[in-house]
Length: 276
Image (cartoon, rainbow, N blue to C red):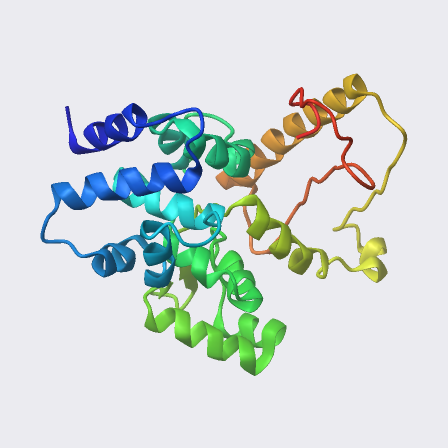
């Protein structure tokens, strides 16, 4: 049995019906530190990308539940697995429930290349850094001029900071590329960042034929909601395939958002999984 399996087994053996996400994370962290006696909590925090203050609160059982991206960063390091689709299969209990709720809908199949990088989840708290990195993650990359034209002097400053950290790389043609072309963030962070993308929608450019916008709403049954979600998921997979087809890729930094939800409060009832 390898280390990841031992730690996962340890965390699963200690699970109880009343165990919380933090309880399980403490068990997993304690097991890892016991296996690595020379590793301090501060060093573990630095390597996993979770703030040391957050790790101390976790181990002292002082504070609320960790944010999904912090849970993902810690578990990813403890289990030595960055590929999200595989990580979600290696952990169980309340941690698995939280990660699946926050990330599972972004996993299309076993071949997905999306990975979790803790430094990016921290970096993307800054809107401008996220947008620059997202453009640089395109196959064609970006350039200093493009960053300056879109984001101004602030963008150039953020670009330099990311380059200094090795997050933005320059190729032989002076094109700028993100260190990690495939990445994922948790739903809460994705929600905040989506607003930044929506701001780039340009109604006045509709006649140019490059953008698209529809807003639809109606009172629906759960059966109808499920059908809509199935259609959207199918569309996302097809868009994903087109965007990853090298023959279709070019120099236009294009984005697509597929979003649907209840207009108002979510009904208080036993969940059937349809509304999530």
